[in-house]
Length: 289
Image (cartoon, rainbow, N blue to C red; front, side, top):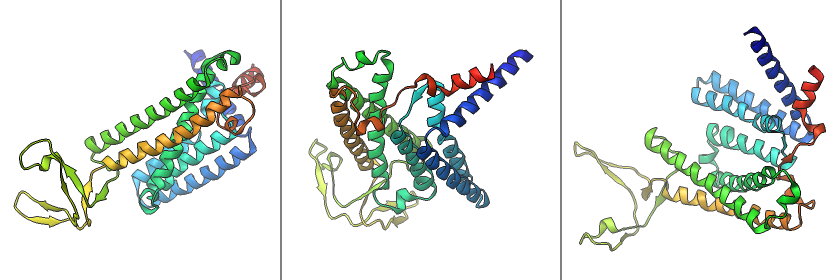
């Protein structure tokens, strides 16, 4: 039993050391990581002083997420290019610290749109890379049709986008959150308004406000300046910009595969298998034996 515990502690120590080496491998990504980690820690302390426990939890979560790229590289023995790693780190910080805690989703118009577009691009990069990494022989990889590789990247990105919208809807329905942000409309069209009870949509235009009628008969004007659409248009917008990001990467990935992996901008976003001299977990194990 003691031997098992010692071995487990040794494995954890080896892994931590390998992660430290991975973090410091590229100067530019390490600088970005260090700056973002410092800002997250400052935010964490601030949330603690404000007794904002939700913000405190998100800060701790963000701090852990910043280590994910390095953990993945060490554990799965893959090399995440500098461009992709920096994009992932910035995306995590922008979504959690800026978007959620500092309310950029509300304060800055289009913040959510920008992140969903970037998410579509990054997820397409991951889908494209999965095909490359799951083929042990790189020559076999490029025997595959470039169109097939681009299609896989696109479909993977859109699937992730759809699953995320499922998650947002579930959180709104069961936990009464508002992850699917609402939209104010001035015109609606619905078959539910057909006086004959048929399937003919009836339009209502120039809607100025929504009035709630409570069970006791009280009426309350919401003062929104229009009709409150609960999340539908936001979901469609998120999927559309995810579609744009996925299309952009898929087109670039198509030409990357067509050129059989020749050096191009896309190489900054396509992970690959680690070479022996960059496999830090193996290096650490060899040194400690």
